[in-house]
Image 1 (cartoon, rainbow, N blue to C red):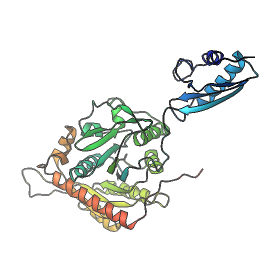
Image 2 (spheres, helix red, strand yellow):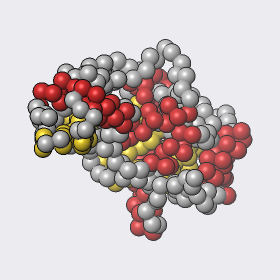
Image 3 (tube, rainbow, N blue to C red):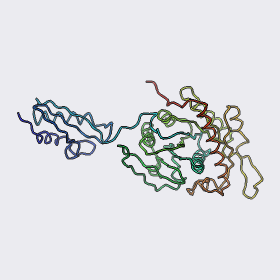
Image 4 (cartoon, rainbow, N blue to C red):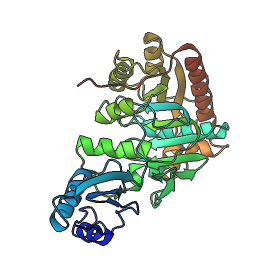
Length: 366
């Protein structure tokens, strides 16, 4: 029996790729390396992704089609190629990022996202290359804080992979799940879906060379934190809390999560947010609404640096709501506080890198 290339391509045209509904020939999945040697046929199938969920079934269907429409005696050899390079392994996802800083809080409502956003902007103002990843998958607030609610994120071909291109504002590269979901609709995802979305924001994005990648993590401890710890070697954590007793109790849990023997992420220091309130008309007065120096005392107890005590200032909330972090304006009353915080974070990060070994990702034993 003589086998001709058209016999093979006609057989492959009967197989449809489930992802597009097109047949293998129509979808351009049959590479031009078809070889026929007697009853031996070899060729390659091109898939967009690696791994591809339909890869095994499509390869089997292609082999069956040739046996059915050409001859059951044909020996079929199918190579698989991918149009996209595979995602880097956990722990190697961001080789060009020098330091990954997780900004965390034990509970919500303590100003963690405000601190993360202004820390990122302040680091950029100090001349560093900075990225900000909004890892609060279920309650993303970074798009609003940077007035990027209408931002549309696109992917471009970079190094053989389709990579998301982060938004860029105030000297900071920014990605958030909020760019991809309806801001008026609750994000109802199971843990696995949320973790996969976060992995895409980390590994399938062109972050480029960064001195600091700031992570705005969800409050508390959750699957999202575990996903971060399993995929990123986090340089250090910054814990944000108010002086209130309830917040301090949760801050302890956050510190314990990072200091756990299986995690071993250094705590760079604590930030006492809303440390006091000073009315604009009485600039010399301090009112300790949430308690006095609770975080300072916790830092001493936990032998952890106190990075900053940030006052409660109404204009900080207003600037965040208006999409311009307080750290952007040099004449803002809080800009100096946030710049001082950024300098302390740099100081503690450099000290940590001198004195401690690099952080390893958390590996879960099966």
